[in-house]
Image (tube, rainbow, N blue to C red; front, side, top):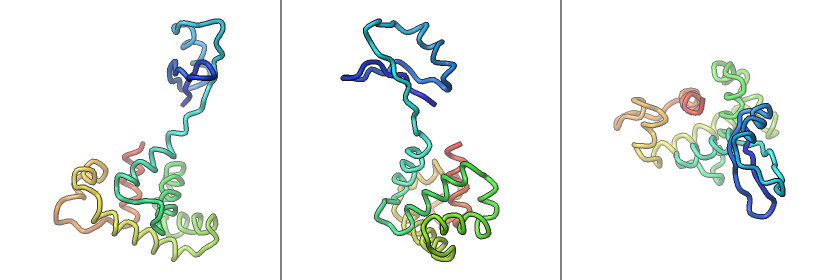
Length: 154
């Protein structure tokens, strides 16, 4: 996704387009100032959205498993098969990136999920996890947690 911005000093957003081809169509309908420069900016929404959801669930950057969980969700968004093979593919992939072991990745993610399950509001949990977030429910497994967030973000 791309944003089309006008000017250099105070940036004025003209619109959002899905591709560079759509830029021409957008510029046809927008008022064009010949003195302005138009800039196409790629919007990194996926990463920000993952972070927004994790923050809403009470997972902050200071938690040991926060970055691992962020990576797990990001990787799973790119390749959904990783969720189904979480211990064989996903944890080893994250461990390789962070130079640690898959078991440490699993444990850190589990601890972060346990903390977030007690910190996040019931309303926000229901929005992400649906009925799994009922008042008396135990926390979801790592796989369920990651899968629900991935499904929510898609």
